[in-house]
Each structure stands twice: as C-alpha cells, then as structure tokens.
Image (cartoon, rainbow, N blue to C red; front, side, top):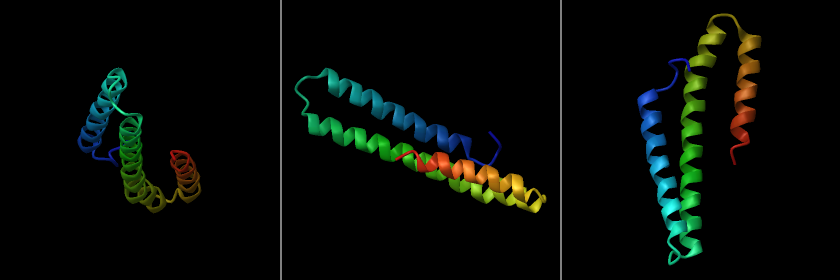
Length: 92
C-alpha cells in the first residue's frame, strides 16, 4: 500500500474491530445474551469497518489521486478512482 494512509492509525482501528468481533463470538457462545444485543454489536462492527473504508478512500483521494493527476496520468488515475469508488460502494 502506498504511503497515502496512516498505517498505524488504520491498524489500531482494525485491532479494535478485531476485539469487537471476538466479543461478538463470546456473546454468541453465551446462550444468555439476547439476540438483539448481538445484532447491535454486529452493526457496530459493520459501521467501524465502513469508517476504515472511508478513511482509506479519503486518503486515496487526497494523496494518490491528486498525485496521479499532477503527474499527468489523468486517465489512469480516474480509472483507478472509479474502481476504488465501486469497491467502496459495495461495502454496505
């Protein structure tokens, strides 16, 4: 991955999400936990992953896309941006 993202920040967020997923796993194993509580946590993880995607996409726009256009690679950069937007739009 190009240096367009703060790797440490992203890894920290993903570590928190990983902990949330482990928590959900424990909730599922504990038969006394209500289903709606588990669904709330699944929604939280989904939102957290979406936010990571937003951060990466924003940094891609501010760094990779701007750099590509400044370097004169408009067509290739726009194709890459289109692919990134398509992939991000499929997250939800």
